[in-house]
Amino acid sequence: AIDISSLRGKTGYVTIDEGFKNTGSTKSAITFLDGEEGILRYRGYSIEELADKADFLEVAYLLIHGDLPTEAQYTEFVGKITKHTMVNEDMRKIFDGFPVNAHPMGIMSALVSAMSGFYPDSFDEKSPENLQLHIIRLLAKFPTLATWCYKKSQGHPINYPKNDLDYCSNFLQMMFALPVEDYKVDPVVSRALNKLLILHADHEQNCSTSTVRLVGSSKANIFSSVSAGISALWGPLHGGANQEVIEMLEAIRNDGGNVQKYIDMAKDKNSGFRLFGFGHRVYKNFDPRAKIIKKAADDVLEKLGVSDPVLAIAKGLEEAALKDEYFVSRKLYPNVDFYSGIIYRALGIPTNMFTVMFAIGRLPGWIAQWLELRDQNQAIGRPRQIYTGETHRPFVEKNKR
Ligand code: ACO
Image 1 (tube, rainbow, N blue to C red):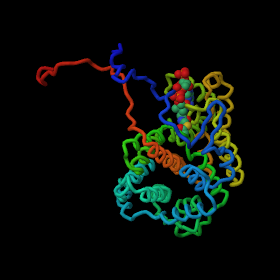
Image 2: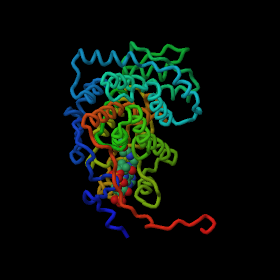
Image 3: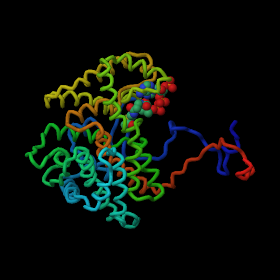
Image 4: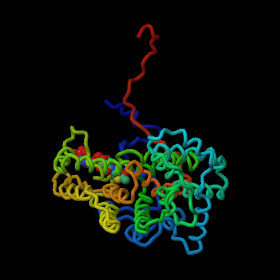
């Protein structure tokens, strides 16, 4: 039984909304999302147009500063990011301490958190110039750190940034160039990456972004807040789903490609299994990002001449699920994570790096939301609860328990 008096504080009643299904945590002018109609816009620009025409750093600028950059603003922004792609060599000592099989999301969260130690003036609330510099540092160094994780897993030496390359190409170069080979970035790969990063760049008050805002509301610095966001993103119900999807598709393939078996398992509540890459808290019609990614998966695989058998399994699974009453009645459609992994794989990115790719894309959104929270001067985030534990109990000495 719930003690109703615990619901009533001096300032009124407490509402309970587990999972915040109907609770708005903030007003925001960054991302518009209409889940019924499948509409997503950053600062008023449709996701379809941005994914088709923009450059990832242009979108990052848009999210962070509110408007698309002019030529001059873009050149200045990119120039500053390019200047900061190198990482302090002492960060390597922290990195080197991780075992070779450490998950890259754990490493990324730790290294971004460690940036607070390397830039102690990030605690200085009063300097907007410092803050802008830290934001540039984050955007610039994040891909560099991500490639360290991959290189370590391969037993390869890390590559330093090559700053005559654009953001995506530089990332690909740091990932895949080997000292013994002449590496040339394939523009098909670079463009595909650009599109994926744009599609992931913001998604209003999702779990990781809300985490960034909640941590930021205590006036924690940008590095700590983003580090917390990375940890939240890692979970399999959120960004970690992209890794789970490929593992699930592989499992179906190795199991003879029987998609119906997995659909039936997902419908069985006792199985503990869900169709990864399906369902969304807000989209109840379709996820516009999934639509773009599905098409891009076909394009990219064709252009790269890659034939991935799990693409056919994914399509078969989608088709079967969308005919099934269970999925239809619950409005469960493929989400952003369903097809993204197939593209990442075609680009040569290993499965355990998929969620890191998501994080690289989401970084500008986290930054924009953190800045907005700060400008709104919001109160510290501190939800309430209904207490359901024991009422007052007298203390009993150890020997009498
Ligand atoms: N497979 C099977 N059943 C599902 C699935 C799924 N993927 N998703 C939801 N359901 C069912 C639930 O069991 C529930 O059924 P019920 O009404 O009979 O109890 C109903 O659909 C509603 O689901 P909830 O879990 O209440 O919806 P919620 O909004 O809390 O969860 C979520 C959304 C976490 C995305 C969920 O759909 C899920 O777990 N999907 C799989 C993981 C995934 O793909 N996550 C990535 C999301 S996108 C992103 O974060 C980038």
